[in-house]
Amino acid sequence: MTTRIFFTLDSLGAVHYLYQYSLQQFMDQVYFVLNQNEQLKAIPKSEPGLRLKMITKQLFTSINQTVGQGLLQEHQMLFTLRLA
Image (cartoon, rainbow, N blue to C red):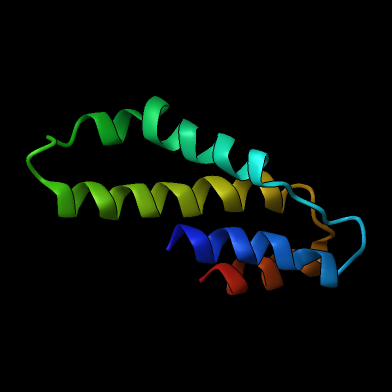
């Protein structure tokens, strides 16, 4: 799932030449979701399925919010749909 999110970010360059995102930017978001997310910390490690679901949801939300702010308005919905 995370690879699909990254390659969606990577393919944004085809939409507009200014949309260039690096693997490091993506990994910073992954790190934030894994280490700074209070909702994830509330789920016990004995529930791996539930934790994976929360990680995926939070990563999608985090990427959509941070990247979506930098897109032109007509490209924001396209990006959200490509993520989904």
